[in-house]
Image (cartoon, rainbow, N blue to C red; front, side, top):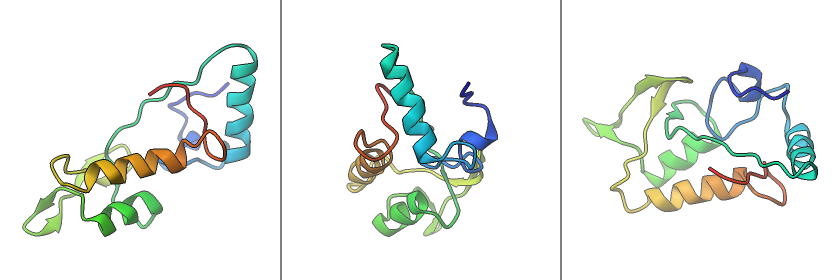
Length: 116
């Protein structure tokens, strides 16, 4: 059974990641099994992005969409530890967020979700 509080589900609670016990092929198999039983996979996504060297953070940093304090990316602390937060008033934020969702939650080659 897949339990969302299991640390192995995500890579150290970093948004848009999978953990070692649930690699992409296992996640796709899990979702396919749900669909075969006429069930749905609905997820919750926290907008906190781990302040670490990984795709979601690097893409946001490149797009310059994170909240800033004294011209530096603001660091808060939530599930993954040090985290950055999208500035929802920045012109590039919606595009960044849409692209992260489109690539990670892709029905054809990512984690297929039915709702958010």
